[in-house]
Image (cartoon, rainbow, N blue to C red; front, top):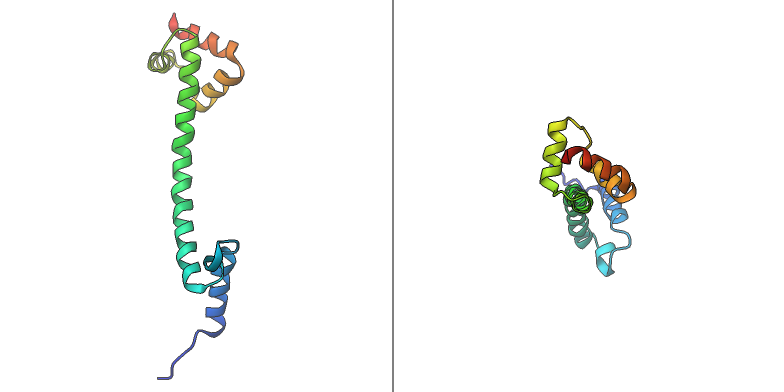
Length: 115
């Protein structure tokens, strides 16, 4: 059976990787082998980063809610437990937004929980 070189398909695959590696340092953006390694690594890190960003944002929201709650004289866990008991369906993102930008509204919510 005759040997089949990649031809058009291989060239297109190479171009796709090299285009993704454009702007990388030295040979990582120009040499095929190093570009493949670097692009695959970049894709893996981008995947991990998308998951990490969600964790980071949740930590930020909790920190902001905790700061707002302490100003209102209640701690974070008691605030969240009280909101759940009262049936207030505000998520952490919205509570953090209120704590940062609308402290008076957040204080009213905290007062509702305190009693």
